[in-house]
Image (cartoon, rainbow, N blue to C red):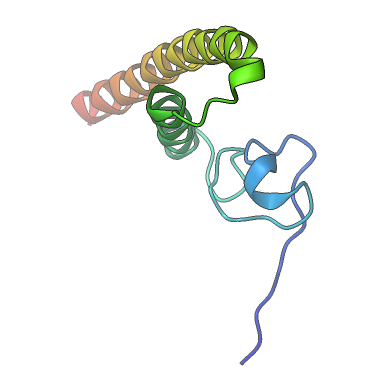
Length: 103
């Protein structure tokens, strides 16, 4: 049995994993499910990226100052993205709860 590969989407979130070529199936773009499923995938993506930034300890002496600035900026970015994803997830979960109450 062979594997079927899908090309990465135009708005591929995981281009570092897919190299912009092959879909890795993370669903951050919503290919295999929009809404809550997509936002949960994005949340996981940003949490992983944040952890990698926080755990980073491969400093190059000549570039350490620059690396520290970039790391700080990346941490700020991923924290903001995590907050946004959590807000969207809460929104979709509220919609789901409200629709159940109507039934």
